[in-house]
Amino acid sequence: MRWGEFDIDNRTWTLPAERAKNNRALKLTLPGLAWEIVESTTQRAFNDHLFGIGKNGFNNWFSTKRALHQRSGTKGWTVHDLRRSAATGMANIGVQPHIIEATLNHVSGHKAGVAGIYNRSSYEREVRNALALWAEHIISITTGEQRKVISFPHERG
Image (tube, rainbow, N blue to C red):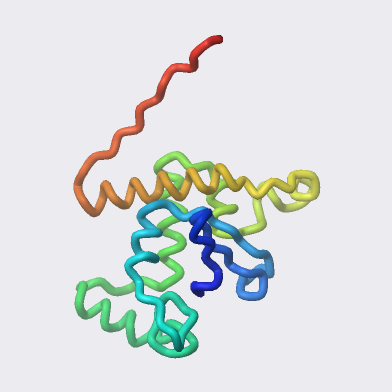
């Protein structure tokens, strides 16, 4: 993530097409939990990257992951497992598969073939809601505090 990719006013982060694996830009409205991380990170004059100490951002996954294994006692996972865990977790809390795909910037499943030719939706609102729901889920796991979603009846007018 680079500082220049954030729109603070709209609370979005845009992954530019040239850095995406599928060459498609992805614009995400980040939930409050993510913005807390962004806002707690110091921007450095010599580095446009949000994370990492070098001018090219964070690029030492091997050593850092090994140190994390030692500190946490975990092992046998890959960095890609974080995406897989998020996708599975979102599905487990009710996020629909096509919204998970849109969140991860995947173009397959419902967007492949004929359906993808006609359906050009970015599902921006649904992705924003999915990320907010996922953030609430993470908060409940890390704090032990149960979050409650209350549905309000539709008023007839």
